[in-house]
Every structure is written in C-alpha cells, then in structure tokens.
Image (tube, rainbow, N blue to C red; front, side, top):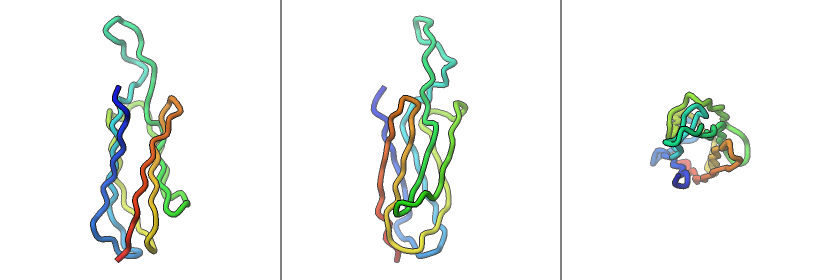
Length: 108
C-alpha cells in the first residue's frame, strides 16, 4: 500500500467568526478485517479510526470512524475562527500511525 496522503481544502478568503467549509480526504484502503486476500488469508483490520482538528492547539472537532467508512475517507465540515491561526489535522490509523497536516489560516 502506498503511504497515506492527507489533503485539506480551505476557502481562499476567510472572515473572522464567519463559518466556512473545510474539506478533507486521506488516501487509505480502510481494510475492515473481513476480506480475504488472493490466497484466502484474512486481511487484518486497518482503518483510520479517528480524525481530529485543532485550531491554535485547541481541539475543534473529533470524528470517530468505523469500518463501514469507505476507502479514502472524506470529511467535510463547517467551522469559524476568530482570528488568523493554525489548523492542525490528524488522522489516526489502527496500526498506530498518525498522519498530520497543518494549514495556516489568514483572516481577512
């Protein structure tokens, strides 16, 4: 499997305290632990089980993901920020890996 690749899309213009849409996606196969490989061996469960977004170090959103989520999970949500700062995105994998991406938010 290729290394999971997180992606985040933010609007070009963000105003203080005005909700905006955040779109996120990570490439990941999301093995449920119920499939077999070509040799008939059960493929162990390996999913992104949690997604956390922080703004300037404070948790803003947490999402628990389950095996029913499709490959390459996409999460979209609305949020508002009071001022410029840093959004930190983290995806937690069953194997203990954590994939992170930071985005600087500039408020107009």
